[in-house]
Length: 166
Image (cartoon, rainbow, N blue to C red; front, side, top):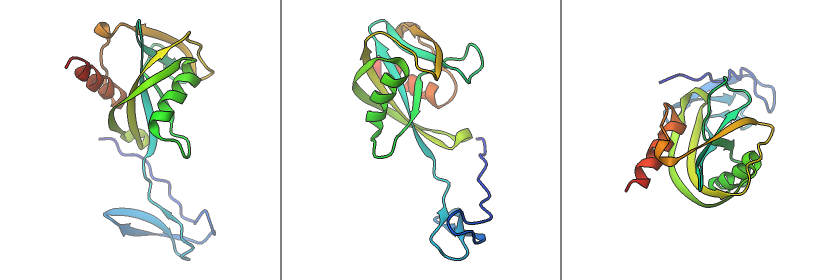
């Protein structure tokens, strides 16, 4: 399991006082020594992974920041006051231009390298694919030819495929 880097926070970002380490619930937390209320727990960031199913198959896309040839399901951060299934529908529309419906929870997975909690959903989608600025390529893989990969999104695809076979 990879370790992730915790910000140092030697000084409180709220009041500027020095911070100190305090053990809370078996976790070391950076807290304000002046007791202004600041505490950094380094909780994971919620990210939704979306398995987008069209009549032709599952859409896998290439993010512009990734190495050439790497493709995956689409992902996106959960916005404030948004529940993850809304994120799945929104991200499908924003990134692919597709209208998503019938979101089904697949599972949750830790992405330790980025300290993210991946919340996976499968959606059905229709429309014409129009990539946004984050993506520069895509492929539609027929479900029977879809192969899983290492990592949390690959694990989500494996779980989704296993449920489809039931």
